[in-house]
Length: 281
Picture 1: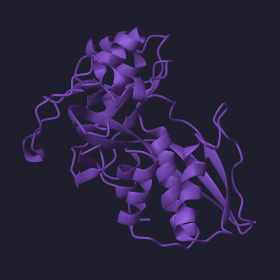
Picture 2: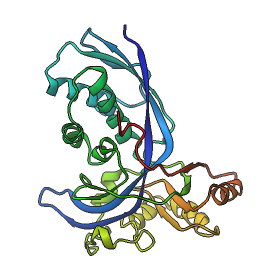
Picture 3: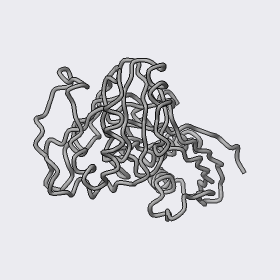
Picture 4: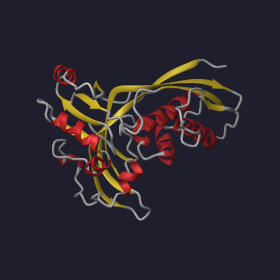
């Protein structure tokens, strides 16, 4: 049995998310900025040579078909042609499911990044990104490793340098099905495209927000509480929800707001990251 290696899988925020159209295959065309934050799941990998890929502590109710870590490991092994590679995966989960913070996508990306090295496949990052896209549209940015302006279905990425910032992130106790939000007839799909050089985080918005708020009104309550606080530079929902966040220029301001959090609300405070912690791995 191999050595247990542990790697982080950080959360992401969509600082804005514009839906600018729809492809013939039904996928939506987006523009967004992904920002990594210092709040992460932890994945440990015990490499074996028995050809068995298993999740030793799977999330309750999640089958291997839905488990992105297992699917990522199996896909990497299949495409690399190394049939006897195996791994036991242990996931310490912190990022809530269905929160729009990219937890499942981040876990899958960390699985690909780590096993690419641990299994000695050693593919280039671009090849891993293409593999990740087969599993989910949000996975490539975590492999890319940089905060990014994203277009297409989210896979056309361009690095952006973002100022230091702290975030109060709230995670309402509801899960939003991304597919349900994108399928809604109420979703607008005609936001005017912008050029990366001209975008403003303050002016940007999340086109998925109105639909998600109607599906789960509790999100509106938590979002409105954040909007009532002072000193934030931006308040928005991340991805398709249910997570919402407020951005602050200082740790002190963020923690002061979080200290006032009502007893019925939950979340965390975290700084934005300059890049993914595995960007150089």
